[in-house]
Image (tube, rainbow over all chains, first blue to last red; front, top):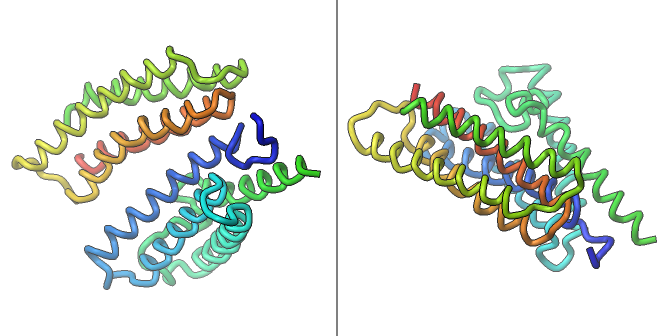
Length: 134
Length: 117
């Protein structure tokens, strides 16, 4: 590993793989939902699409694609953390708010709470790889 | 769909996850043996996609065909992408990518079974 500060080497590769799976599944799922039954739960499906975009951004940032990947990764992972906490709390307090589930509903319960754990792993990894710079 | 194939797919993908997990524990990068195992699993996944799509195209009753075919095709893509992403670096983290890919395949096969049932 020549580049010690890289976010895409070592365990980062596995983390990026998990992010890529979520990016694909959230985007594809919301795409199908918006295309076939958008009117049933527009807010939930739009939110799923947003979550998908955030996962795509995090994947690209961590994989060091684009001009400022680390900043992109930070922004995406923080957005993801706020998103899963906000949507998770709202859906637990008022389940009727979103008629259909999103990735972030009930803190990602439908996905084994991985959506809740993932942003913390992402933040930890960004901090860990930053430490190696200094 | 055909259950024996999918049962063996589940067993094979979990086996791949376990083998990759042992590699990670031993601090080994991915080698030909794991990749060969992934290749075998991929053959089964392709067979599942071919049979599944043929069944949808035929008169088989599937709850939501678009999602069903989506899962079938996604399962075909996961392993090649995972192996490519893994082989670009020979480290323990790279082998862990194969665990992610294997678990994802297992999950997708389960969803395919659910949708068909």
